[in-house]
Image (cartoon, rainbow, N blue to C red; front, side):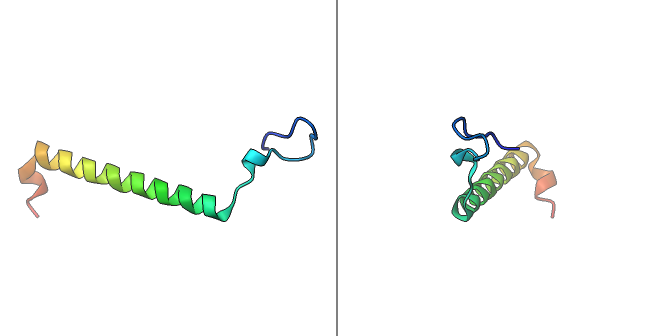
Length: 56
């Protein structure tokens, strides 16, 4: 249950109202963070053990 408005306890807090645009922005940001972390891990693995990663 989201926090309620102090003046009217039945009305939801406006900060918890979400839009489709905000959802897509959050999803795109999460995807960008995941790709960035993946690239960093691949670079660190390649530097740590280059013969294992490049064997393919």
